Image (cartoon, rainbow, N blue to C red; front, top):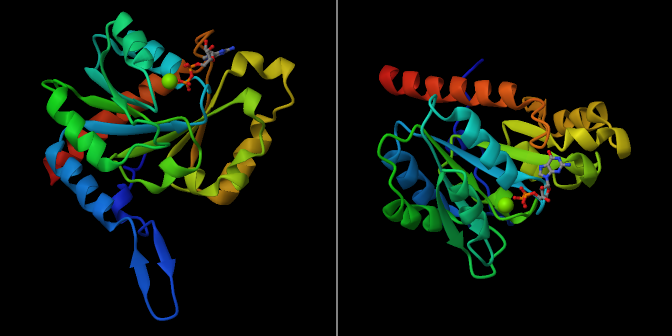
Length: 237
Ligand SMILES: Nc1nc2c(ncn2[C@@H]2O[C@H](COP(=O)(O)OP(=O)(O)O)[C@@H](O)[C@H]2O)c(=O)[nH]1
Ligand SMILES: [Mg+2]
């Protein structure tokens, strides 16, 4: 698989075209995102986005269990309030730190940069950011990640990519979660794949169930491959 372009190579986000000029509203965030990339040259950073409840934390727990002994993983997890998700992850032995946004609906790069001083990343190959549950605002904020993954549960409807296009446009991978519920809900994986590819022809799609384990080997193999690609690129550079 081709190495994926970093977000910084993409068209800048947060631009409002005016008559004769463009206001780069998110420029400050992009500077901080670059500082994060510079600070983590050999750690693969994956920003996991979704609506609340699509199964991000459960996926982190299951991923941590499966990657044990293969990769060293850590998670920064954002929520408007509570430490619940970090506690759930630490309960299964994952190195996790909660970012409480104080009501904010997304994580900004500055929060990640500050959090890096409070988590031990020695020997870590893979740093997940579990973003605040929201398919709108997080899409606009580059967090210095290498890859963006959007999780969409089978219970959320297969019509979301065109309603929330920026999230799908800026993601490398769409994970259709809760596949164990597909027999019970009106959700077509083919339809959501088509919708997502209309928005972003390069997006990859995988179907998983963290509850039953379906698709998790393919997901974990993809992560290992991406970590290796990042390390190789590092050597080449
Ligand atoms: N049926 C089913 N339920 C799941 C699956 N993954 C997570 N859940 C449930 O979905 C709810 C939300 O999960 P959570 O991981 O907290 O989602 P988050 O808000 O995106 O972090 C919880 O009740 C989970 O047990 C799955 O693969 N299948
Ligand atoms: Mg969560």
